[in-house]
Amino acid sequence: MSESDHFDCDLFVIGGGSGGVRAARIAAGYGARVRLAEEYRVGGTCVIRGCVPKKLMVYAGRFADEFEDAAGFGWEVGTTRFDWAALKRRRDAEVTRLEGIYATNLMRAGVDVVADRAVIEDPHTVRLVASGERVRARHILIAVGARPVKEPAIPGAELAITSNEVFELETQPARILVVGGGYIAVEFAGVFAALGSRTTLLHRGDRLLRGFDPEIRDALGEAYAKRMDLRLGATVHRLDRQDGAIRATLHDGSTLVVDQVLVATGRRPNVAGLGLERVGLDLDAAGAIPVDRFSQTAVPSIHAVGDVTNRAALTPIAIREGHAFADTVFGGKPWAVDHELIPTAVFSTPEIGVVGHNEDVARALHGEIDVYEARFRPMKATLSGRDERILMKVVVARASDRVVGVHVMGHDAGEIIQAVGIAVTMGATKADFDRTIAVHPTAGEELVTMRTPSAIKRPVGVG
Image 1 (cartoon, rainbow, N blue to C red):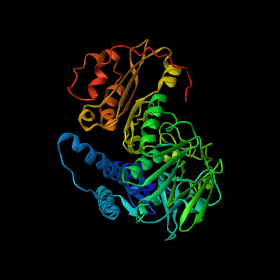
Image 2: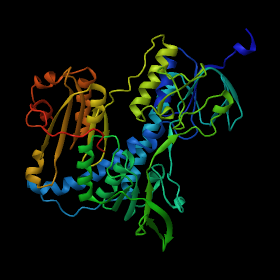
Image 3: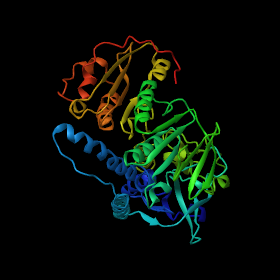
């Protein structure tokens, strides 16, 4: 065997997030010799400073509504007080516990985990930066995720934090400005408002959540305008220090004085200093690593999964891509992830759950469509008195009767859409929905009791 044929391992995974961990464990299960390098903490964005700790904060914020609503049901609730330090301590402890589980599962699978930064030297060689060790691998998997960015660049941007640093705040800001209109901005603005911070959510667009159903976007905007200071069509011109606080000067010359500014305007693939230029891997227009449907790059021995490929920046997608990669390369069972119908949730308050296409995309793909929708006051609100509405929409391709999109805004929308996602992924038709027995009384029963398409004619391209 020549020197060039010698490999120290079958798979070297760069990045210990959801996609990398899943790929490593599955590959090791097939008998592959696997090493994984993670320079920060095993678990990645989702576990350490993303989905998990964020949703724990969402839960914390929703108790405020529960306390208020209880009175309508005969409960006498005394004085309530929120303790930021207690939440942070317990949240961080849970994150540490989960990190330990991830590390233990890798160890039990036989994966050699290295706490170091790894860079690519050639198509089969990875260098560990701290130790200087060079490892030759038959296959290299890049699973380094994405990083938050402060865009566009403005004077004083260093005074703001991102969705990484927000979890490090030792005290709750009394006044906070959240900049952005996507998942992260919407969710954190909802959290801080619910926990009692005077919250301003500022977005340059005329609606939140670009790409979502226009009516869902409008309904969320209306709900948020009641919960916080929502400013659409606005941008920040500069940030300055002012008496221990931060003064934000807006595009129109007006100012806001707050204790903290959270910029959540986007994330970019985390490829800086990875060594891609050494192997001739060019990035696409979004700065992501191009791959084929099997997650292989232009270099046959190098693969990439998760947010670094910018296909669908969601943790469950990274996990499935990692699994598919390992099955394909090491298990002899090739398959690729279908990125068309992806159930997803936005943990705003009210919550949003979506699977499939909005009206505009559905028309472009399927031609004539029928749209069924229901707006109603949830049963709980009849006694609590809360000003709350639920919105549900079902989008149907007329020619096939197939349900190609479901959009829900309201309590537990994420849980609802997970179950509905199974039906939509299986190709359920509107007739299948109609013959499903309703569970009464629930909000979800509306999805199987809507009989008449909406008469509203919506122009293509709205929003």
